[in-house]
Structures are given as C-alpha cells and as structure tokens.
Image (cartoon, rainbow, N blue to C red):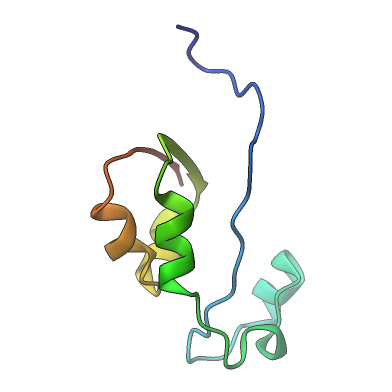
Length: 87
C-alpha cells in the first residue's frame, strides 16, 4: 500500500450553506464567495449522505471551519470512514 500520494480524485462535492451572517470583504476577496452566493443556500443532507455512502477516505482543507456551521459534521461522524483534515 502506498501512503502520501493522491492518485486521482474520483468526485468532488461542493455546496454553499448560508452562514446567517455577513461574509467580510477580506473573505470575499480571498475565496470569491459573496453574501449573494450563499444567501438562502442550504446543503442537502440526504445528498451528502448519499455521496458519503461508499467513501473510504475524505481529505478536507480547513474542515474545522466548515463543520462549525454545517450539518456535514453529523452526517460524516455517523459514517464509517477515515478522515484526514488539514487546517
């Protein structure tokens, strides 16, 4: 078994969740994500659960931030997978 190398990415899951607070100009400049992009958006929990159904490994950047305001934490913690988080 080889460790430390990503051979290929099979799929990505992307979505927006309205944080119910204003996104700062700094964050918008850094990420390109604006208040208008997230307004009224909600991550579909059943779509995430289906996506994670056969997942063995999740690699996430800054997952602590994402988990702070999303239901992904509940879905992912109930799944049998191994997560590697980079903060």
